[in-house]
Image 1 (cartoon, rainbow, N blue to C red):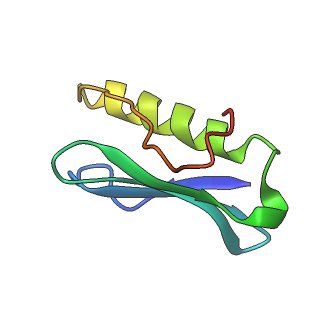
Image 2: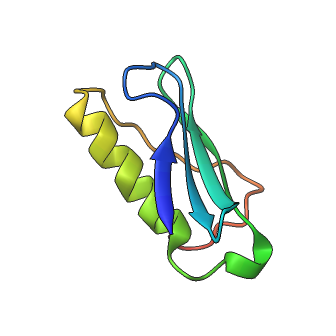
Length: 81
């Protein structure tokens, strides 16, 4: 698996994981700061990809000295990371 981001100097980022050249999981960081649209393809769920993405993004934001806020919206699957 590979974790990538669009641009380390960009205020808006997309981080993703590829397996065998196919994007199977991703998360976005919006311009105003929040994270959103965390998604893992169904046949790759429960393998730790969401957790890996969130931890990677948190490390990236800490390194950029960007404040981290987390929340969950009602109606999501509410599965554990």
